[in-house]
Structures are given as C-alpha cells and as structure tokens.
Image (cartoon, rainbow, N blue to C red; front, side, top):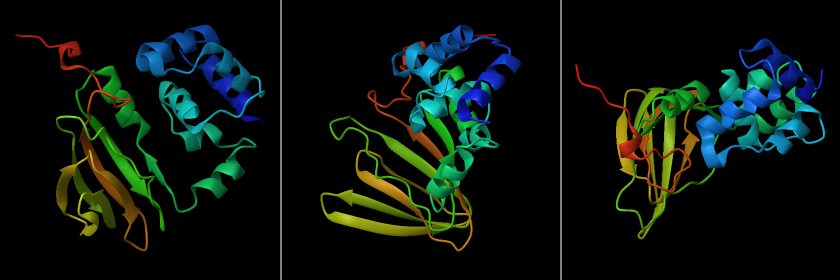
Length: 205
C-alpha cells in the first residue's frame, strides 16, 4: 500500500468521509499554515511525497502519529531509516492545545537513543519566550547558544528546568535508552503555534 492510498482510506473511514471536508478541518486548525488543497490532493494521489510538516498536519487531524500514518506503507522503511536516533513530539498534545486555543504549547518530547533535535529559536526581538521542562525518563543534554557562547547542561529523570527560548537551543539524548521530556512552551507571536490571548474562550459560572 502506498502512503497516498492509506491516507485516502483513513479519511474515508473518518468522520470527514471526503477530502474537501478533511481539508476544511486542516484549515480550521492550522489557518494560514495549513497545507493547500492542491498539495493535499497530490499527496493522496501519490504525485507528491509531502513534507514532514504537511504529513504532521494530516496525522494530527486523523488523531494518529506520523509513524502510524506511514505504518504498513512503502514509506515506512524510509521513515525507519530517517528517524533512527531522532525525536518525535506528541501530536495529540499539539492538537489539544490548538483545539482549546491555549496560549502555550504542551508537548511530550521523545528522544530515541542518540537522538538530537534540530536547533530552534524564537525571535530574539520578542519581549519574552519561555520553555519549562520536566524529565520523565532517561536524561537530556540542553545546548544553548547565547551571547556568552554555547552552554551545555545535563538533566536526568526527576529534574525540572526552564530557559529563555529566544536563545538558539536543542535537546540531545544523554541516556543509553529512550528519554522523555515534558515541555511547556509559552511562545512568541511569530511561533507557528501561538494563539493570541484574546482568542481564548473563557466562561464564568
């Protein structure tokens, strides 16, 4: 089975039933960051492989991980080669934050053995941007590149820490097995997952 065939099958079996309804839900959740309908159609018809970010959007709306999306398809072997020693985020946590219009992003960071995230950074010109972290399993190296050069600190199971996400940073597995870190990110306005505080729905009893 190809990846496109599986996506078509999952959409048909979902509450959306057809591609148009499925795409409307993607737009509702991801707004201007959403994959366009033409690209989605190309992926479903196996005329395009789809970037990781696009496949992530598809998987989130389907309520599964990218690994589960690729499982049983000709893309599964390629994914296994690409993700050896890399990392994944909990897609359901991302979807929950988007659905509830949260002004922060809760994620479950899973680092496989030898895994390291890409370097990331929120806008240095922002007033503030913070990440709070708790190591649930294993150990993690946090590398931060600031004005004083690169600083590398190691945290193990049970440790909690926070840092300024406006500095360039990345996470690396410091353990022989899998490492799990809970990350709460209060992003700046130009973050893909930022939700304006005035968009939060509140109620009084």
